[in-house]
Length: 495
Image (cartoon, rainbow, N blue to C red; front, top):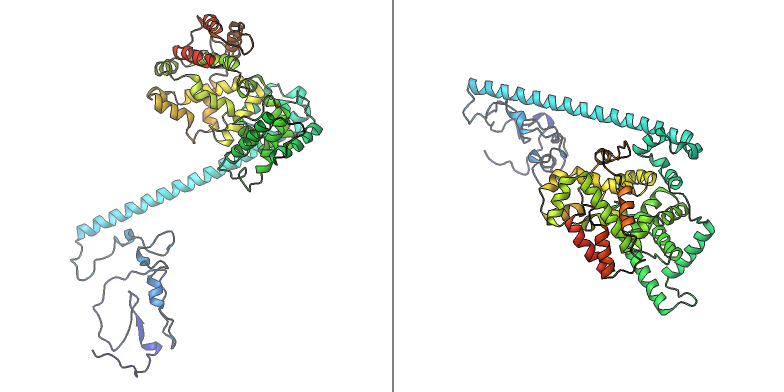
């Protein structure tokens, strides 16, 4: 067939046909062998047969913007493309052997099975979507009821309601976010009588320090400590909850957090700023305004546990470590024996948990739920939370060697949920007959008091070899782990 010359007239619309593969031809051209089937693609553009045809309309139908064939494109971005399973019932092209009846029947059966599986999957997904929607709706309704109970019944009558059974049950389930800040303020209290005037004075002094302005009569040593403290605060603020992005440079809470920590360092120069404080202060700022957050933070830092750790009082820290070791041995003896055999001491993993009250170890929502009960029950609950984490992963930890166990406990799984954790903590919450959860068992506070009484021979923070010997004798018979006895010597000799 000879090529048409450029002088040939354009084809009229009536003489232009489009084949299944998208190509156009004239009626008087040689006809190709007709195929038995056609594959239609919903996203192909039909070429125009007008006197001014659209440029490359056919090619645009076959190619995506990335230059790939649309037939083999992404199903998510090309919803009109037919999936290959849709061709299972089609006959083969004429130049290939045709299917036998047996093969066709098998293909029909296979296709029907695929359709049935797809339908079942769609039904299952739809049920899951409906259930998730219903659960969310129920949770929202329940949360609204709980919020009303707190706002209308408990908070207006706090002094008479906070220790009732109903209030404690609601507290255990987690505080609604709308009332959490208010409940935390009431639960922590303001035993230090921090006033807003004092807060403003501390903030002004903090601004001077943060801006590098030397205070009147400041000694060289004090200036060095101030500069070191300011540098540490600024560094730690930038590393606080980096995933949120609100405490980093340019974030809306960066200055608020820096200001609060600086103000506290001015308010309590005997404590100053210590690493990990930024995480605790940050959570308070997320739940309340700056002044109430400063009051809550200052009063929390004045609690015995926080003072012992943030002031690095090693004798008092020793009491907590020994008490926890005894508590651990009492409640989870098998895991305790495994840790003792590996020389995995409490200070290796629990010290970070205590310093940040689990803020760095658990997700933010789980941490807030832990803090809910922590502010209700006091420091004892932090050690119950530690046991809950150990119990939750007991089977895994029993199979771990030292290095793996340490890495696991220092970086807990990110998928720990509040409900799962609290189910494991609840085991240690039951009381009866003066014992915590069984005859002969003691509460953490009881163990801590016994340890404290046995260490009364320590005179302040001055510890020498003779004092260490007295401590060892005082703790003799308390079933303290071998690894902890070595730890105590290391800890106290460095005092």
